[in-house]
Image (cartoon, rainbow, N blue to C red; front, top):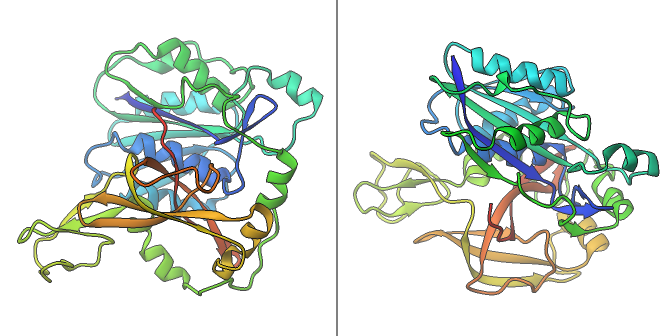
Length: 347
């Protein structure tokens, strides 16, 4: 039997008509990814396998990416969509005999709403995701609570309704955007956002070519900030490379994960039109200059990240930023993803 150990929520970064809306570099996968990684932070031993039940219209061809996020053997199960299937997923997770289980749900509202859809969804959160982590052991059963369709008539609405009724449960960690104001994202014109986000991608590589196998091999460091600590000199090597960057030691390197949020800005630069790599041409053509930050993950470990969800020049040296997994650019007919910096928020 299992119990709810951690529940995480994420609402899209932008807003339109009083509801959260996806930004230009967000898609359904990045929305799900942020909720999933927040829940996964509570798992502890990542060597344990995990089963992830996905209640969202995302293709099975992306299953590998969910495993890359959690960093452990993962079984991905796609369930029927809707609040009833979400309630079933909660019960199934609690009744599981062993292992970690995560119920992952999302609502995707990327199109400009018409008056009818606004009336149906009044009070809803809009675009976002929630992830419920269940682990073996006794505890109060959230599936025993009356689980009704939420204000949006969706699994995400049901998840937020469940939070309202059970957030006082002892032993459960509720993290993320459960208390966030749905209308307080960055204001944006939904038609302009959709025009950039939904543009067709070419089957021809754009910019500096990175083969798909090499890209996927680098994901532990790209997505999870995986690094190694040397037992001889205690220095941190990032990205992971199988040897100590400081002393060259090859033996006994300890895998560690560096923090994703609260990172100090060491340097900034704004990339204007003509200065960008060619893979960012469409971004600059639509949105103008963008900012790149050098941040410190740990002493001696730094990363270069593009700033998103903020105007260029709005972040200064010494500020703290968080990171999110976002679209980077298309290559080989698919989107490539990487972490980007966002303004610091308190969850």
